[in-house]
Length: 166
Image (cartoon, rainbow, N blue to C red; front, side, top):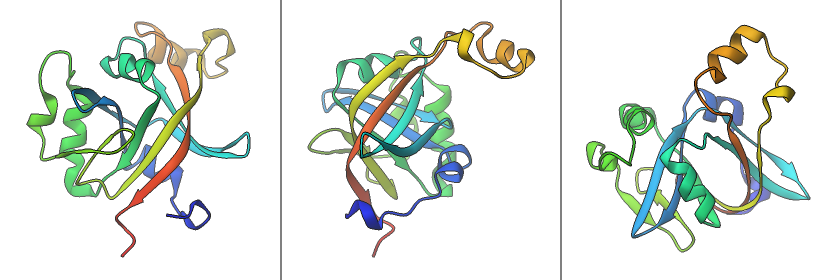
């Protein structure tokens, strides 16, 4: 698909519909549901931004792989995304608890049920710094009192698989 013709409401799609972040290889991969992220442009490249805490199982897959996917689903898969966002792949085969079917792409992994998959090449990462977070103290404490800060990943969108287009 031509990136110039790509259309998505990113604030709605990521925050309200949620998305799956997936990284790894066919032999071993992990997915996690995300509701934080973004789409934009940097260095004249179309990019996605994803945030992963270092204590999440997906973190090691993001660290050890050059490519990842961000994929989006119809409402009928909401319960599946809830499972993938609340269970850890460290503890069990959480994909088996869903109706989702892994789809092994040339560079990464998505799912056959995805209506849209963005294949991304990791081009930048940085750990967030609590001293730079400028939100209300109560919200900062709620988000980071017991959990570590996120690592921000920027991935260049190198392929779009859009099953919405007929």
